[in-house]
Length: 216
Image (tube, rainbow, N blue to C red; front, side, top):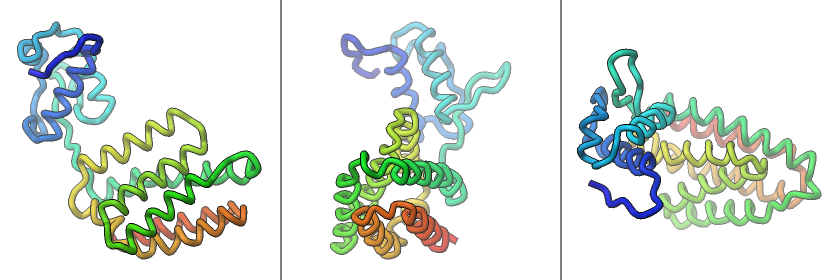
């Protein structure tokens, strides 16, 4: 049973407990989540557990079947599902670029440049895990220029989901395309410094194309 500290919301405790059971494989795909059993395990009423189950359904970890209950969803992210999610990333990158074009005098991009330089350096040193993490940070920071908390959460949740549930093939895509990614990031740094932000869209499209070619 997880340790519950004073001030912890019980539904959050239940959410993390069930999520951990799913991500570690203790609750396999198709497993039925039973409120009464969890109530005994966690020593709490069914109400916060029910709320946690609803939130897990919204998060894609569980699926509710009418008159049957909640079951563990197949959370594994395949190559096809990865690129389906990357379509959202692509859209938000374009939206962020449009904002930079419209408000170029008011938006600071030094932080984006700094992270891009880290990606390039990690790739040069063949520190591929750090390179992949820095690239994800680059995407999050770029989209963060939209100044939209909802989009920020969506992108952070997307990367967390990929890191937790992606197949080995998916996790290797960014690493395998690292040389093309860093080439485009070098161009993007030059674009940031010259303020010709409209050209950023082409660079990101080239990154997407490189990952698709690697994957397929």
